[in-house]
Image (cartoon, rainbow, N blue to C red; front, top):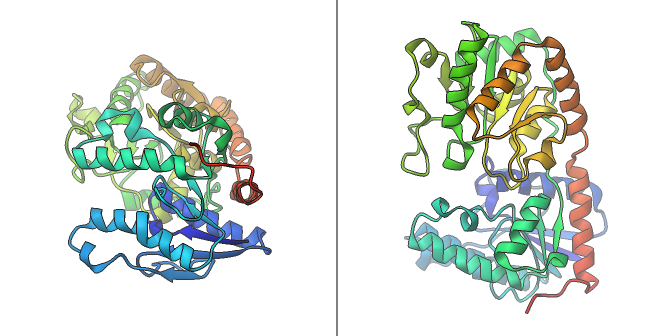
Length: 385
């Protein structure tokens, strides 16, 4: 079997879809010695891929508009290159299936957030694009998604029969592991201007991430705990994106002594495992996630976790985290206080985190993805009419 993969997201390696693509193709190269793989991208890959990579740029007339260029590549240039290369199956690892693929196609839909949350459809162009993607999903032979919650949303919103949707969970990368070297931890803290006692959040600042609520809960917990050295470290820059979709958490009313304990700095990828490992607590109050990779990465580093009980997150954290209603400020503040007031609870949560994270692996993801390929080529998956 000759399998083609849309590798556009090699151009965005830090994104969720970029990480998924990188881990999936690397792991498939380790476990599958029988099939042939070919990656297709509109530009040269900025990283060295595991499989042969074919550059097939979009037509020159699209160069003036990046959105049109991307759309033409997804719908025409990429699928056409795959057909010309003689692939038996074409995998699009993000929500952009071709409407007329011309070859058996599998698409990974990580979530349908723009179709579930109106705020994520900001203008006519985005709404038109998502309508096209929703229609094109019906041309795929099979859909892969990353949680049972996401599957239910896909079935409900896209009207895809459930038997044509397969769940393959994601995993934390191997670089996410507990780091205990005091010098390494101290150096990372110094780079970001934080002390030894900090609550950590990473995961974006857009509306559904509920970060202003975390700031409110921290202020309440800070007063209850009475530890003047406690900090809230939020990975991100509130000045980078503005508007209704990105509420500024700095506008939350805080006393001056509490405000100075809230740190906003974007954490570089190479430092994430160290910052996770050194955190007294990782808090993730998101209102909606297709999967929830950030708390899983934190758990893989042995961090105690307080997490939202919404959408897919209970599937990810299981009983390894303290799960709370993210819209209840008192519940969130109380959970923070419970953990930080008890060394035994912290130790128990750290142990649970490591055990839970070990149950997810990219090898398992790749094996299940390969099973989907084989099922499609065996003719068991039919497009929905």
